[in-house]
Image (cartoon, rainbow, N blue to C red; front, side):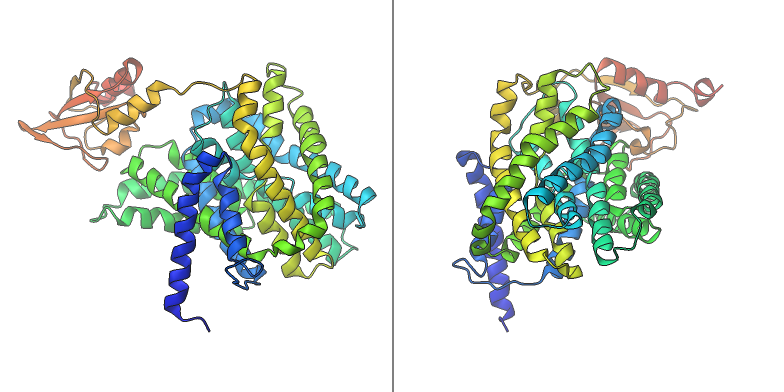
Length: 491
């Protein structure tokens, strides 16, 4: 039994090495996720660390919890105004695209490898989805900007296609365990999971906004605890009702992120930090679970699966799903095809056959791990170069930086003065309830001649003076709320 103090020290060293390696990843030109995996592998039984971690159930449980917060943070940081124009494209890629990829890779593995058809399809389903953790971290940590609607489409697809891959994986395991089961019996289950997950996620996102704004907590540090508990509640509620919990938490984050709520900026930073922590823990755990010596015998098989996946299945699925959308340039379709990154989700799904006792579970796990390593190394490292080569990269928007500085008080643009008129729609409301646009900032609130520092929970009163920093359209929106009487807005 390892003494607890030594265990804490070992965890601290692994986390510290992961944080330092994220800085080195920029210099080396490789994704930080790959280095997290490598650190876990070096700490494992085959590495100098010598940690013998052989608990697929624990790895699966940790990975599930981590994925919940990664998906929620990704949804929280995604604007609905950007997602709405690409909604149907994202839905097609995350459902039909995953199914097409599974079929192509599955039949290729069936004809070339020593797998039954169901085993080959199970392998394909596990690696069929684009990984949200990999896409979010690589696009954001390396500050990759893409033209037009590419970025929101990629983030929407990667955040919403995991439920499809999870459903296919569990369904195929069930078919292997009970061959007499008809595949058509799975269709109602799929529809139920997607529908309930979507409804539960949207409703819980709205409920989160109301809860954060209405519960007057005495300590700022309790607000992250509140949202964390609501995220876990969302996943558990959706799963118990028969819905897909992963889809629910992603949509809850997407819904909440498009409301104004108290401490919004700081809470988004809190969940971003939590998502990074979850990614590090997840990749370290999965790295510990694998034995690098077992990857060498499956290298040829892994390279074959990678080739079919990257150069055949993914391009075909993307081109077929985006065929109805003729306005997209061919270069954009190629870029979407290339950013089909594999990451933690396939490895987590590869633990399912291990826990269910599938015959070739060990072989499937090692092949999947090899595919993930290759995908992150080859695709993840080449995204910036390919974006420039295809001419789909975009320069950084200065307005984003300016708005961040404005929110922190770093710049001083002309302030516009408003007065909250008696009977206006804003009287008696918290500032968070005004649902102000991101480019609008109430710098000073004057009440009875005294300046106050406004916050999201500040309740406006008639006669309050507001010093506001914002753009033209947003100013007019705020003016209509604080200066016009409620009767004028709602005849």
